[in-house]
Image (cartoon, rainbow, N blue to C red; front, side, top):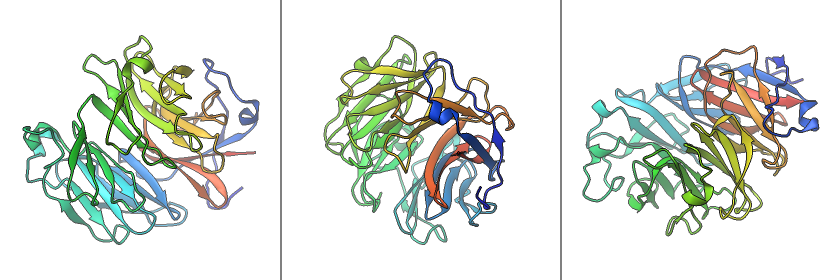
Length: 356
């Protein structure tokens, strides 16, 4: 037992539509609400024992080692629907603002940067130039919906605002590199930075999926290969740390599922069903561990866990937690020697871990 955590142990529920792991089923799940319950958390990340969240109210950063207090909101700007964050390994944070339509125009700041761990912020992009299709006004898209870092120093960034754009100077200048699909996610390859996956839907709500293996220079459309005869939207992906050709993609809509490829997207297998997956994240202590979350059929907070990179899953549900829960993002960190999952939800931040 770890003194920093207020422990809540609840029973395991396993989804019947997939095989489960006896080893995982023997573990106890530990849940804890850790704040911001009035905020809808869109993005969450961890660095050096601190949590960083982009929400519908601005940016919040944890202020204590037990995550019981928070600093913020920073960038609490009128008209922002939510904020997405990317971090380097030191002090830098880049925040991307996604505006409500009635509040966005070409003069809005799109990107903000802090070089002192959130102490001060300044705008680094004053318009949406380079973030929309050529010939389209900036107001055609409510930038910026997604931002991801390809490089650890945050020099190379990818953003989505109706098109995929790339910056090689930390967000000062952008160029459009891909214009297909209505995207819900961009996922860089981690150990394989030139591999980036992008997905969402086409206009008729069939899944859309594409990948680049050369850092965004060329893209491969995999929509027909991943389609499984169901209306669906691809919402998230995870790339196996040891092999960039092994990828999991999560889907929602009438065909909620996780599908897996082991050959770079040429063929796919459904490995998990009946769970509206919105976020997938790799474990920190084992290359085979991967976590999935989103919307459980019970609308309770839940996490599905696999120790063989998606071939079988065990689902853990926070039965004593609030209802109507949706997990938008999560991050996995090692805290006091244990692997902990932090979940950004529509009702604040929660933690989850497994204990023998």
